Length: 175
Image (cartoon, rainbow, N blue to C red; front, side, top):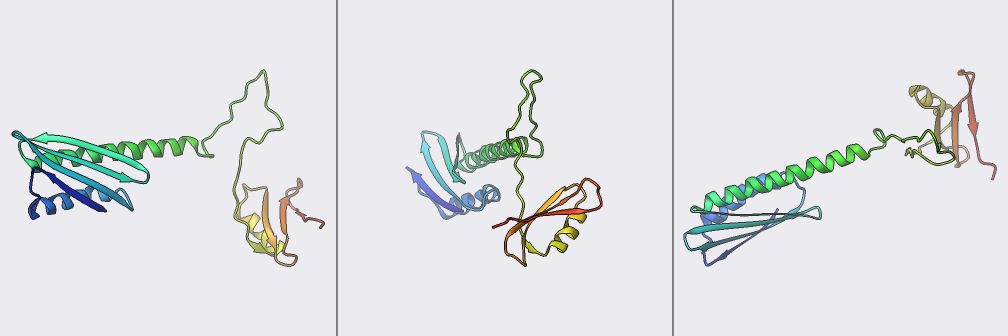
């Protein structure tokens, strides 16, 4: 994490610098790359710590004041950590709710949806022989077909289970 520490009307000592860097490790564990701007200042009898963290296109900010600078820094770290955890939980919840596995299509009994794509699946297409494709499809009994690149022709093929449940069909392009 890149940390920029600035002191306004306050000299940043080595002890404060080390303390901020040590405390920012708590924030750094949440991100691969992050930048932080720490501004420490004194106003009358109050020690104010202001921390901005920018990571993954998101910004987090905490400003606190206390009689002790170290206590103010600690409060900021706690606030930032809470903001980051909340954002992470919210992101994970959105990803979970929007995932294809949990996505349900709501059907209106009056106006039934037909001829529309309601689900998209992604497959990794690997080069293999049709016989190998049959074996791979047998490994996954819940799948009805498998798309692959035919090693013999170099073209995309699909192998599928026939209705008799014992045999397989091969779909091959003509051209």
